[in-house]
Image 1 (cartoon, rainbow, N blue to C red):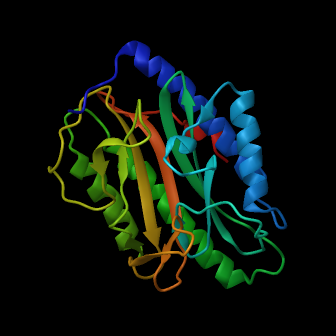
Image 2 (image 1 turned 30 degrees about the horizontal axis):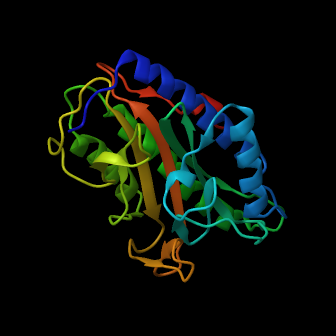
Length: 258
């Protein structure tokens, strides 16, 4: 049973979302040539604690990090490592905070620019990333009372596939609240007027998980990182939202993101 949040619960989730967004912004500001994803994870650890939150991702059994950081062909669940970020890398940062028991989750993808990146290649990567951001916004636009989960899914799929890219169908967005992952599932592809009817106050983590090439994915040997099977670029955009009567409220507000 997917229940709308009470006013008090939404107030707590707003604070959780504020923490998540500010930490994500701080980490993204530090995605530069020469830094490692372990370094970025350490920044997120320090920032969450400073802001009065706790790591949402550490509530996942067996996961030891505050972030999932994926690079280039890596899709999701990337374990932070000592690998150094390089010019031209496409880097996705995914993280979440818990505040007084309430979870929020957000992710964003950036291109690490540099003089060594060829102009045409950089433009193709920039276009690829931009489509994901736009697809997320269009999905969020459908997160209103009376619509269905399928309306969100359809909007995301349409934007991504019309640009010539692929939705990773085996990975989905999700409900969120007292747990990081709750019902309902929110796929990145689907049909209009299908799925759960949305009610004002429901909270969802809407995700755009997509690839430049094939949508097929593989699990890496670390047991966590999922990558594209063909080695093509992947990107990830995600925001936690509360369903509204006329417009969704973005709890991990985009205004905090560069």
